[in-house]
Image 1 (cartoon, rainbow over the protein chains, first blue to last red):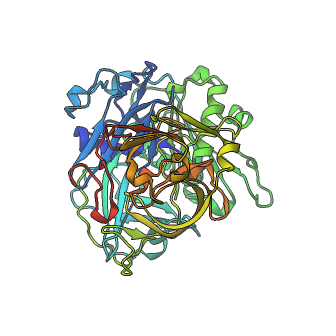
Image 2: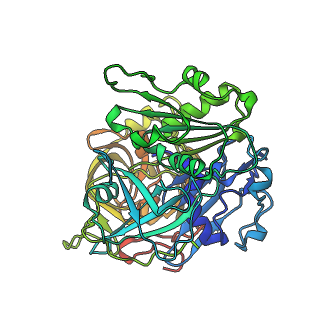
Image 3: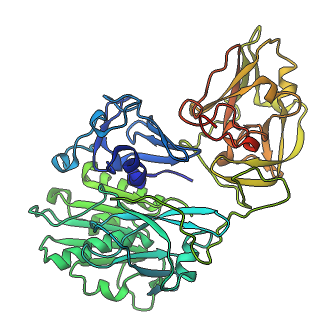
Length: 104
Length: 223
Length: 204
């Protein structure tokens, strides 16, 4: 099993952020690259591990419990572990940056 | 509706369905009598505004797709979530940049939704579909592709019928150079298919000078 | 609206997992004959000449090269394994070096251990769960060298705990006086992970 694109976790992201966020952009804490969430690399292990396509570092981790989701956004610049609301995550709406936001 | 021996389109009645955008997918969850559950993602084949349709390819080692392709009959129920995937979406807008779609196998499905929308909306944006399948019998939407109003280029990688006019090899840099709009035309590119196919196509396009930020990909996972 | 799944039964769907009433299946699990591959990142491919295994945290670190490691006495064991994602697989055949054999060569007095792997994965296990014939550094599966996608050249095998504890691509153990939660244990998965008590998540 290899990775799939960030688009695949839209439903999970909607549980966490209230919208699916795949056309939002986030900046990697480790290499600084900004990518659309839809262009991140998703690995499915015991939980979901989301990696930066530019440097391979982990930018997000999710564990889906019975009725809650544990979220680690520690690899995204400008965000913390909580709260989980969209406003606290470093996001840029895709419609404004479609051409420039995802230079990998 | 049977598309090929391995592929079937299911038209779904979803109460409260809020509509979707071309390129999106749904997550399907099946629950067995004993509580066992399995969940997979399937691309939406229909254009926005049409009844929700999923086109599903039966994977030999799959556990959900054989059920959806061979077992489900009208009236059966299963659960789905969606629409999902606002990143891998095309909509007609004021931009005139051409649309270049690259499909491997059943990766045609979300790209067909885009072509169906383009036709329905009367969009005049130039569009080319490069579609790689194993054999002519594996080509999904074979008849409709003739009338979809786009430049459709096919390659058959495993076997070709007598008199085949299309390509007969895997998608690589040379094939992409032949078929893709040149980078100077700044095409919007969507690539969907198995992981190795998507990697080869995306890397080839970048090697030809297409900007990574213009190339959107959707890789299939495993079975 | 994305909706939520509620569990409508799909007529005729059986799936790959099955129940089992032999008493070998922990609660909430399903039996599979496959060996699903779950991975938190790209598969490392460490050359055997570059590979070593280190136990640190004792009076001095002890390191084995691949050849030294393979020269240690090994065991063949047949175990049921249980993944927290709900599949279980019965009668899996492994070959490996018992962690007891490794720790015989280490002077230590620690209650906790963290296994660490190529690629950065970590998981914590109490030392008493790694000793007494309960854990191995496995290098063979089903009579073959352990495939890289299943953790080769070597993985930790702790079959009495959920399988995320059986770290793939393992390269060492750090022995600790204080428990130190690992990669998943810091983000929702249970610190101990006993499948028979269904310790999947924090709070279970």
